[in-house]
Picture (cartoon, one colour):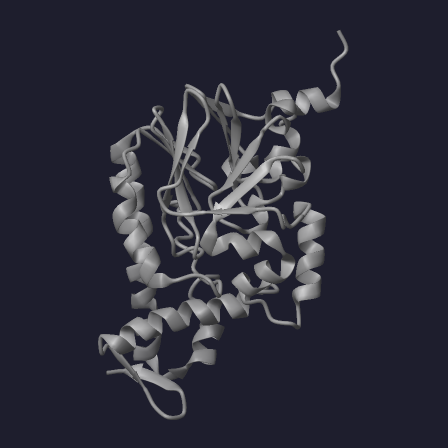
Length: 308
Protein backbone atom coordinates (compact mmCIF):
# COMPACT_ATOMS: atom_id res chain seq x y z
CA UNK A 1 0.00 0.00 0.00
CA UNK A 2 1.31 3.44 -0.91
CA UNK A 3 1.59 5.95 1.99
CA UNK A 4 1.71 9.69 1.31
CA UNK A 5 4.15 12.07 2.98
CA UNK A 6 1.20 13.81 4.61
CA UNK A 7 0.01 10.55 6.16
CA UNK A 8 3.50 9.82 7.45
CA UNK A 9 3.64 13.30 8.97
CA UNK A 10 0.33 12.74 10.75
CA UNK A 11 1.41 9.35 12.08
CA UNK A 12 4.63 10.85 13.42
CA UNK A 13 2.95 13.35 15.78
CA UNK A 14 3.45 12.05 19.33
CA UNK A 15 0.26 11.87 21.38
CA UNK A 16 -1.03 10.89 24.80
CA UNK A 17 -4.60 9.82 25.57
CA UNK A 18 -6.48 10.21 28.83
CA UNK A 19 -9.98 8.87 28.36
CA UNK A 20 -11.73 11.24 25.98
CA UNK A 21 -8.79 13.66 26.02
CA UNK A 22 -5.96 13.55 23.49
CA UNK A 23 -2.79 15.63 23.67
CA UNK A 24 -0.88 16.06 20.41
CA UNK A 25 2.64 17.25 21.11
CA UNK A 26 4.04 20.08 19.03
CA UNK A 27 7.61 20.16 17.77
CA UNK A 28 10.18 19.88 20.57
CA UNK A 29 7.44 19.14 23.08
CA UNK A 30 5.58 22.29 22.12
CA UNK A 31 8.48 24.72 22.28
CA UNK A 32 7.60 28.15 20.91
CA UNK A 33 6.72 28.88 18.11
CA UNK A 34 4.78 25.60 18.35
CA UNK A 35 2.66 24.39 21.27
CA UNK A 36 0.75 21.30 22.39
CA UNK A 37 -2.77 20.62 21.11
CA UNK A 38 -5.52 19.27 23.40
CA UNK A 39 -8.67 17.76 21.91
CA UNK A 40 -11.67 16.53 23.92
CA UNK A 41 -13.78 13.93 22.10
CA UNK A 42 -17.26 14.42 23.56
CA UNK A 43 -20.11 12.27 22.29
CA UNK A 44 -22.00 15.42 21.25
CA UNK A 45 -19.24 17.97 20.66
CA UNK A 46 -15.52 17.83 19.94
CA UNK A 47 -13.55 20.67 21.51
CA UNK A 48 -10.04 21.88 20.76
CA UNK A 49 -8.10 23.87 23.37
CA UNK A 50 -6.17 26.55 21.45
CA UNK A 51 -4.91 25.85 17.94
CA UNK A 52 -1.10 25.87 17.69
CA UNK A 53 1.04 25.18 14.63
CA UNK A 54 0.85 21.41 15.16
CA UNK A 55 -2.92 21.62 14.58
CA UNK A 56 -2.14 22.10 10.88
CA UNK A 57 -0.58 18.63 10.70
CA UNK A 58 -3.05 16.50 12.66
CA UNK A 59 -5.64 16.10 9.92
CA UNK A 60 -9.30 15.03 10.31
CA UNK A 61 -9.01 14.37 14.04
CA UNK A 62 -8.46 18.11 14.52
CA UNK A 63 -10.42 19.40 11.55
CA UNK A 64 -13.72 17.93 12.72
CA UNK A 65 -13.67 20.00 15.94
CA UNK A 66 -16.97 21.80 16.55
CA UNK A 67 -15.71 24.12 19.25
CA UNK A 68 -12.48 25.95 20.04
CA UNK A 69 -11.92 27.13 23.61
CA UNK A 70 -8.98 29.51 23.78
CA UNK A 71 -7.21 29.46 27.12
CA UNK A 72 -5.78 32.83 26.14
CA UNK A 73 -5.02 34.86 23.03
CA UNK A 74 -1.54 34.99 21.51
CA UNK A 75 -0.44 34.39 17.95
CA UNK A 76 0.98 30.92 18.64
CA UNK A 77 -2.37 29.75 20.05
CA UNK A 78 -4.35 30.85 16.98
CA UNK A 79 -2.27 29.18 14.25
CA UNK A 80 -4.90 26.56 13.40
CA UNK A 81 -8.04 28.71 13.57
CA UNK A 82 -8.01 29.16 9.80
CA UNK A 83 -8.74 25.42 9.49
CA UNK A 84 -11.96 25.73 11.51
CA UNK A 85 -13.93 28.60 9.94
CA UNK A 86 -17.29 27.13 11.03
CA UNK A 87 -16.32 26.15 14.58
CA UNK A 88 -17.54 28.27 17.48
CA UNK A 89 -14.63 30.09 19.13
CA UNK A 90 -14.91 30.92 22.84
CA UNK A 91 -12.41 33.09 24.74
CA UNK A 92 -12.42 34.70 28.17
CA UNK A 93 -14.08 38.10 28.00
CA UNK A 94 -10.88 39.88 29.11
CA UNK A 95 -9.08 38.56 25.98
CA UNK A 96 -12.09 38.74 23.66
CA UNK A 97 -11.18 41.85 21.65
CA UNK A 98 -7.68 40.44 21.14
CA UNK A 99 -9.21 37.42 19.41
CA UNK A 100 -11.65 39.46 17.34
CA UNK A 101 -9.31 41.82 15.50
CA UNK A 102 -5.70 42.72 14.80
CA UNK A 103 -6.19 46.10 16.47
CA UNK A 104 -7.46 44.31 19.58
CA UNK A 105 -4.47 41.95 19.62
CA UNK A 106 -2.04 44.79 19.00
CA UNK A 107 -3.54 46.74 21.92
CA UNK A 108 -3.24 43.70 24.21
CA UNK A 109 0.43 43.38 23.27
CA UNK A 110 1.03 47.12 23.55
CA UNK A 111 3.02 47.05 20.32
CA UNK A 112 4.72 50.20 19.10
CA UNK A 113 3.71 51.68 15.74
CA UNK A 114 7.29 51.39 14.50
CA UNK A 115 7.12 47.62 14.09
CA UNK A 116 3.45 46.58 13.95
CA UNK A 117 3.42 46.16 10.17
CA UNK A 118 6.38 43.78 10.29
CA UNK A 119 4.87 42.00 13.29
CA UNK A 120 1.58 41.41 11.49
CA UNK A 121 3.37 40.17 8.38
CA UNK A 122 5.35 37.71 10.50
CA UNK A 123 2.21 36.45 12.23
CA UNK A 124 0.47 35.88 8.90
CA UNK A 125 3.49 34.08 7.47
CA UNK A 126 4.50 31.96 10.45
CA UNK A 127 1.20 31.45 12.30
CA UNK A 128 -1.45 31.69 9.54
CA UNK A 129 -2.86 34.51 11.67
CA UNK A 130 -6.61 34.94 11.23
CA UNK A 131 -8.67 37.05 13.66
CA UNK A 132 -12.09 35.79 14.67
CA UNK A 133 -14.63 38.62 14.86
CA UNK A 134 -17.25 35.95 15.64
CA UNK A 135 -15.50 34.89 18.88
CA UNK A 136 -17.74 34.65 21.96
CA UNK A 137 -16.73 35.71 25.47
CA UNK A 138 -16.91 33.45 28.53
CA UNK A 139 -16.35 34.09 32.23
CA UNK A 140 -14.65 32.41 35.16
CA UNK A 141 -16.51 29.20 35.98
CA UNK A 142 -17.95 28.72 32.50
CA UNK A 143 -18.92 25.11 31.73
CA UNK A 144 -19.19 23.35 28.38
CA UNK A 145 -21.09 20.04 28.30
CA UNK A 146 -19.62 17.95 25.48
CA UNK A 147 -21.37 14.64 26.11
CA UNK A 148 -19.54 12.25 28.43
CA UNK A 149 -17.11 15.01 29.38
CA UNK A 150 -17.40 18.62 30.42
CA UNK A 151 -14.95 21.51 30.51
CA UNK A 152 -14.70 24.09 33.31
CA UNK A 153 -12.81 27.38 33.05
CA UNK A 154 -10.73 28.74 35.91
CA UNK A 155 -9.64 32.34 35.36
CA UNK A 156 -5.87 32.41 35.88
CA UNK A 157 -4.73 35.89 34.78
CA UNK A 158 -1.26 37.38 34.69
CA UNK A 159 0.21 36.11 31.43
CA UNK A 160 -2.73 37.83 29.75
CA UNK A 161 -5.77 39.44 31.34
CA UNK A 162 -7.98 36.56 30.25
CA UNK A 163 -5.65 33.59 30.65
CA UNK A 164 -7.58 30.54 31.94
CA UNK A 165 -6.96 26.96 33.01
CA UNK A 166 -9.35 24.55 31.28
CA UNK A 167 -10.26 21.45 33.31
CA UNK A 168 -11.77 18.38 31.62
CA UNK A 169 -14.05 16.35 33.89
CA UNK A 170 -14.32 13.53 34.88
CA UNK A 171 -10.88 12.80 33.39
CA UNK A 172 -9.26 15.43 35.63
CA UNK A 173 -7.04 16.80 32.85
CA UNK A 174 -6.09 20.45 33.39
CA UNK A 175 -4.77 22.43 30.44
CA UNK A 176 -2.72 25.10 32.21
CA UNK A 177 -1.64 26.86 29.03
CA UNK A 178 1.21 29.32 29.32
CA UNK A 179 1.80 28.57 32.95
CA UNK A 180 4.34 26.42 31.15
CA UNK A 181 6.68 25.65 34.10
CA UNK A 182 9.71 26.23 31.87
CA UNK A 183 13.12 27.39 33.06
CA UNK A 184 12.46 30.63 31.15
CA UNK A 185 9.89 31.48 33.81
CA UNK A 186 6.62 33.41 33.73
CA UNK A 187 6.03 35.92 30.95
CA UNK A 188 4.08 39.10 31.75
CA UNK A 189 5.48 41.62 29.29
CA UNK A 190 2.28 42.51 27.42
CA UNK A 191 0.19 45.60 28.00
CA UNK A 192 -2.56 43.29 29.28
CA UNK A 193 -0.25 41.30 31.59
CA UNK A 194 -0.16 41.76 35.36
CA UNK A 195 2.59 40.65 37.74
CA UNK A 196 0.42 40.73 40.86
CA UNK A 197 -2.24 38.64 39.15
CA UNK A 198 0.38 36.14 38.01
CA UNK A 199 1.67 35.79 41.56
CA UNK A 200 -1.86 35.02 42.77
CA UNK A 201 -2.48 32.59 39.92
CA UNK A 202 0.65 30.65 40.80
CA UNK A 203 -0.57 30.33 44.39
CA UNK A 204 -3.97 29.00 43.35
CA UNK A 205 -3.30 26.77 40.34
CA UNK A 206 -2.29 23.80 42.48
CA UNK A 207 -5.75 23.84 44.10
CA UNK A 208 -7.52 23.02 40.83
CA UNK A 209 -8.75 19.40 41.24
CA UNK A 210 -6.68 17.74 38.51
CA UNK A 211 -4.90 14.43 38.04
CA UNK A 212 -3.06 15.39 34.85
CA UNK A 213 -1.57 18.79 33.98
CA UNK A 214 -0.86 19.81 30.38
CA UNK A 215 1.26 22.83 29.47
CA UNK A 216 1.18 24.63 26.14
CA UNK A 217 4.96 24.63 25.87
CA UNK A 218 8.10 22.81 26.97
CA UNK A 219 6.96 20.43 29.70
CA UNK A 220 3.99 18.79 28.00
CA UNK A 221 2.21 16.43 30.39
CA UNK A 222 2.53 15.81 34.12
CA UNK A 223 0.86 12.77 35.66
CA UNK A 224 2.73 12.88 38.98
CA UNK A 225 1.45 15.58 41.35
CA UNK A 226 4.70 15.75 43.34
CA UNK A 227 6.67 16.40 40.14
CA UNK A 228 4.14 19.03 39.06
CA UNK A 229 4.39 20.81 42.44
CA UNK A 230 8.21 20.79 42.38
CA UNK A 231 8.30 22.36 38.94
CA UNK A 232 5.57 24.84 39.89
CA UNK A 233 7.64 25.93 42.91
CA UNK A 234 10.76 26.37 40.75
CA UNK A 235 8.78 28.34 38.17
CA UNK A 236 7.33 30.58 40.87
CA UNK A 237 10.78 31.15 42.39
CA UNK A 238 11.83 32.79 39.11
CA UNK A 239 9.86 35.88 40.18
CA UNK A 240 11.98 36.31 43.31
CA UNK A 241 15.12 35.67 41.29
CA UNK A 242 14.16 38.53 38.98
CA UNK A 243 13.61 40.80 41.96
CA UNK A 244 17.07 39.90 43.20
CA UNK A 245 18.61 40.51 39.77
CA UNK A 246 17.19 44.05 39.75
CA UNK A 247 18.38 44.71 43.29
CA UNK A 248 21.86 43.49 42.38
CA UNK A 249 21.93 45.77 39.34
CA UNK A 250 20.95 48.76 41.47
CA UNK A 251 23.44 47.78 44.15
CA UNK A 252 26.13 48.12 41.51
CA UNK A 253 24.98 51.65 40.68
CA UNK A 254 21.75 53.68 40.43
CA UNK A 255 20.13 53.30 37.01
CA UNK A 256 17.28 54.64 34.92
CA UNK A 257 14.60 52.32 33.59
CA UNK A 258 16.18 52.50 30.13
CA UNK A 259 19.54 51.41 31.56
CA UNK A 260 17.91 48.49 33.39
CA UNK A 261 16.20 47.47 30.15
CA UNK A 262 19.59 47.42 28.40
CA UNK A 263 20.81 44.97 31.05
CA UNK A 264 17.79 42.69 30.31
CA UNK A 265 15.76 40.88 32.95
CA UNK A 266 13.78 38.42 30.85
CA UNK A 267 15.97 37.86 27.81
CA UNK A 268 19.77 37.44 27.59
CA UNK A 269 21.78 40.68 27.43
CA UNK A 270 21.95 41.92 23.87
CA UNK A 271 18.96 39.88 22.72
CA UNK A 272 16.95 41.74 20.10
CA UNK A 273 13.56 41.20 18.48
CA UNK A 274 10.72 43.45 17.43
CA UNK A 275 9.00 43.57 20.82
CA UNK A 276 11.87 42.88 23.24
CA UNK A 277 12.45 46.45 24.46
CA UNK A 278 8.72 47.02 24.97
CA UNK A 279 8.32 43.74 26.84
CA UNK A 280 11.40 44.27 29.02
CA UNK A 281 10.29 47.83 29.82
CA UNK A 282 6.86 46.72 31.00
CA UNK A 283 8.12 43.68 32.87
CA UNK A 284 10.87 45.55 34.72
CA UNK A 285 8.49 48.42 35.50
CA UNK A 286 6.11 45.99 37.19
CA UNK A 287 8.86 44.70 39.47
CA UNK A 288 10.01 48.24 40.23
CA UNK A 289 6.45 49.30 41.08
CA UNK A 290 6.24 46.51 43.66
CA UNK A 291 9.63 47.40 45.11
CA UNK A 292 8.75 51.10 45.28
CA UNK A 293 5.53 50.22 47.11
CA UNK A 294 7.29 48.10 49.73
CA UNK A 295 10.21 50.52 50.13
CA UNK A 296 13.03 48.41 48.72
CA UNK A 297 13.90 51.02 46.08
CA UNK A 298 13.32 54.71 45.48
CA UNK A 299 13.33 56.91 42.39
CA UNK A 300 14.34 60.55 42.05
CA UNK A 301 12.87 63.29 39.86
CA UNK A 302 15.25 62.37 37.08
CA UNK A 303 13.89 58.83 36.90
CA UNK A 304 16.97 57.26 38.49
CA UNK A 305 16.30 54.21 40.64
CA UNK A 306 18.45 53.30 43.64
CA UNK A 307 18.26 51.05 46.66
CA UNK A 308 16.49 52.56 49.67
